[in-house]
Image (cartoon, rainbow, N blue to C red):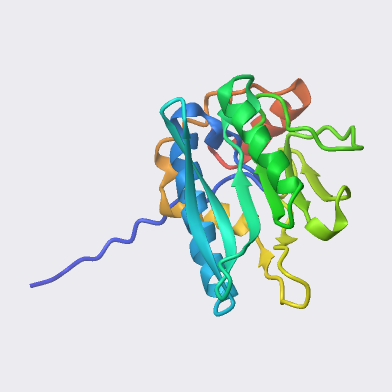
Length: 223
């Protein structure tokens, strides 16, 4: 008997940074959930034995949203909250109001906040003393430095910047490589099989960004 093994290799994401096609409503919910769990699994290994990472949920408008809390093992103290924004957080309504309330509560506490915005839709959350405009943003707000914070602003043409996860003073802070995490997720979830790169991403792009996207996709034979 002869066995023939065929290896089907997933096509990597064609973009150097955030893949704008993953922002589509029919893909984002699944991506959000996968991203939360993947980050939790990675951080759990990096932060043991002093910290553990809890996957938490909030519910409003019959919608569940997951977020992460990094806690000290000994005291169960929430040291860092990690949020990945959803469309509901960026549109007027109950979702945004509830999130802004929680956000302000964290910013008034001793908990660090990491807020990851990988969506071009909606209105960005307010950040003090900045007028920077960008497609995507990562906010790292360390409790001991407020009201100052680190803002990583990047556009569709840029790689997603890595950043150090804030912990308590004296503890080794791991680098969170969000770009690599998303690239591996794209492969594992086989998003290349469900994305039609002949269509324009939603939301749409400016002419400059669309021309760049079109050239990029054509060069890779995806258009």
